[in-house]
Length: 450
Ligand SMILES: NC(=O)c1ccc[n+]([C@@H]2O[C@H](COP(=O)([O-])OP(=O)(O)OC[C@H]3O[C@@H](n4cnc5c(N)ncnc54)[C@H](O)[C@@H]3O)[C@@H](O)[C@H]2O)c1
Image (cartoon, rainbow, N blue to C red; front, side, top):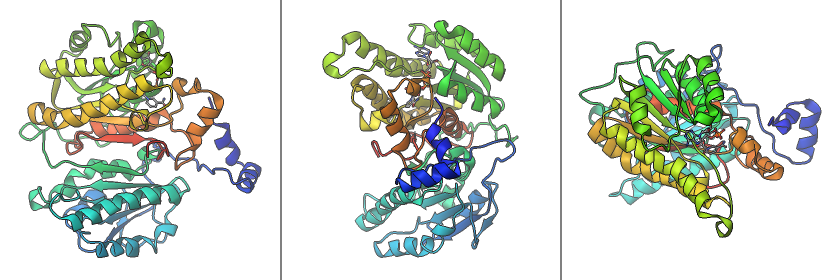
């Protein structure tokens, strides 16, 4: 279902009319293409007070942008606020960004680097938590398709200031067109190194960082799952695309297009994990739980079977197959598990008690299992929480609710399946080891559940 309003505001008369009426002005988002893999302009590197980490400049250089301390029209601004530890220190945030925020190019990126609020120092905790309110507010006011995020780097526990190095894949993602529909987010990096001793092979080909890895994507026949399969294949992974036997034709078409293997299988089947393991005899480096269904009704009208089927597909089968594949060692060390939550699981939604419960359950799973899977198996566990994404699922939503879903976010438009897929690919990067137990909302900073 095409977004005609976005098209209308892209024309001069449409822009004039909608501005006069005070209606939202969505800016067209520039996404990754082979020809334009980077943002168009330099990266301005600023500091608020003294930095508490080393290696930030080196990590920024991996973004592919020219890093500078002065620029007339930066495509990105990174503010290192890791050293801000007092209320007075917050003045440095204003002093750094106030003079330059207006010069940010359209579709630009602002990333604030902070650290974890301390449980032992309430002044530091107040100052670092303040950055979250700052980032979320700036995301709402910046406009023109630009985005703003906070990345928390664990300063104290990493010896020798190696922490900025751990932020490399995250900065590469956030400072690129791949994160076009991600805004107002807080990402906390861990200091644990789950792969130590058996690190995955270093990235030999930056254009295909997932080379040598096998990825299984559930619900891959269409929609977000097909986009995930496509982006992982683009990044070099060998892809196994799984979907229900009833979607076999569509699945095979998708798989053929990507050079992937089709695995027609209902993920709720009792032997699903065994069948997945059999399809990946050399193990899985990446497991993406994307299959999902909705069976909406208000609770008072919801029969038990609608409740049960949503919990079964969206949550129970994810728990079961994850447990079995980890236990069997099918997910190899250095592996990545990515599940799919939803902003409905954060904010709740009328008629979706079953769906929201299943998606909130995914968030619980990721936060609990992430640290343990890292310690026990050398595997990270993260989730994407999509907002309004243009797919068959949302095309079925009634017109007015659909329009509200599209506009009620900082970017005033719906996201595309590829936006979710790019976030999954970031989690899957070999050097995303410090990204664990995270739930990234890909929602254009939706006002729902914000
Ligand atoms: N579209 C959105 O706006 C949105 C928002 C938030 C979360 N999500 C989540 O993203 C995921 C993908 O959503 P989508 O919009 O692409 O949906 P979709 O309905 O277009 O695709 C889902 C796919 O999962 C498959 N599937 C369903 N049950 C299965 C089972 N038992 N075994 C194997 N495959 C199964 C379907 O056949 C389908 O191909 C879902 O988990 C959904 O809940 C979507």
